[in-house]
Image (cartoon, rainbow, N blue to C red; front, side, top):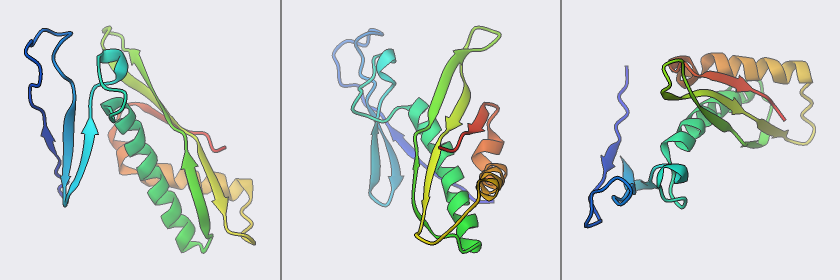
Amino acid sequence: MSEHNVKLIWKKQTESFAYKDYNRDHQWDFGEGLVVNASSAPQYLGNPECADPERAFAAALSSCHMLFFIAICSKKRFVVESYIDKSTAFLTQDKQGELVISKVILRPDVTFAEGVAVSQEILDKIHHQSHEKCFLARSVKSEVLVEPV
């Protein structure tokens, strides 16, 4: 078992603490000098220049999938030159009327090194294995779909 710690820091910056007035900006401090400016999503009065939890959720799933994908490719000696994923998280209401991220779609676009020929069947298999190994995808109840570009 391993632990992964993050320190969240928020401080009141406005005179008013009314719902529409208080600031949503905060920081995610990962230690070692890595700090991410975060806020709520813009539709929830957040700062559009900051990361928000909904996009961070999609990014975490995308990152986990990509890391397993390139690890599998490395072990198979399929050299990957680039991997770009334009993922989307869908925020919907559940049966109780509460907001949930019901689905995340990953859209990985992979470029292999010149001379590396990977069939669509093998590519699909590697994505499937990556999805099966991604502990973040296995940890959430949201549907996670992989739709390679």
